[in-house]
Image (cartoon, rainbow, N blue to C red):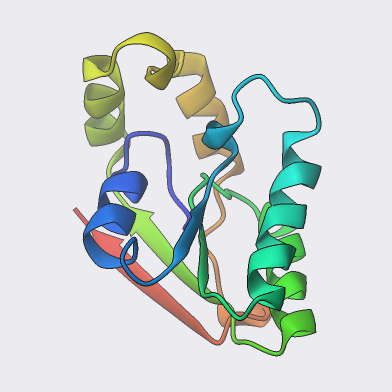
Length: 133
């Protein structure tokens, strides 16, 4: 998954992939140290067990996505990207409607937007699906 906070990634995953994929998100471990390393380990273990996996994070840059593309390659499965291309204003409004820890400070959304590079097959993805809201 690729998209800003509030773009609807988790909702899209719940509607389209949750029944067939292991859903892995750093949000599952809000207080853990080394969440990235833990996430990579969980993804690698699920792939080794033959499961289909979806990584439900913002994944804004090729550098953020590269470890997951490599894990898929090592497991011998294609990596696919789903990019939720949603206007910034929509993401900010959705984020503002969140409560508690789910609400990201607006600076976080703007920071992610500054780093966001749409995924491409040049990164090693077998397919890139763009979903617009």
